[in-house]
Image (cartoon, rainbow, N blue to C red; front, side, top):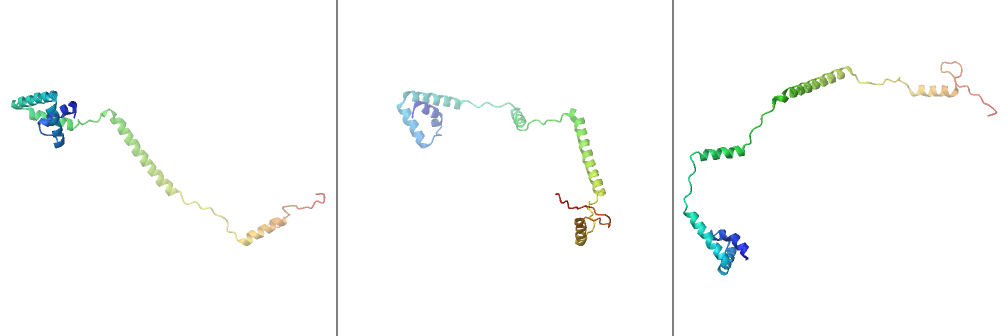
Length: 157
């Protein structure tokens, strides 16, 4: 291990928080390196001095202030609606309701007035169609009048 890696682990080494192989490697390096041993000794002295100091007592209202600060951070302040847009929302709601009501009434009225549209065709039989076609091909009026199609044979043609 190099000095930088050992010095980063010295506090954990002193608190006996390192796993076995790292603990052994740091101990071997500190035994050989004078600067890391000096750093470890000064760190141990600081830890001993801080360990002797009494913990300060918090103020009487500390707990209430702490809880209030935590709750303020956990629960964001609720935003209240800005009521300057209230007339616009009211108008939009009324317009939407009236549009839906108008569409429902129109659908009901149009459905009641509209009957199914069926195209009526005259009842024709096949015999009628054949007779009509024969009369047309002959060129006579179906009412017995003059020929509808004047078929003349033109010899020059």
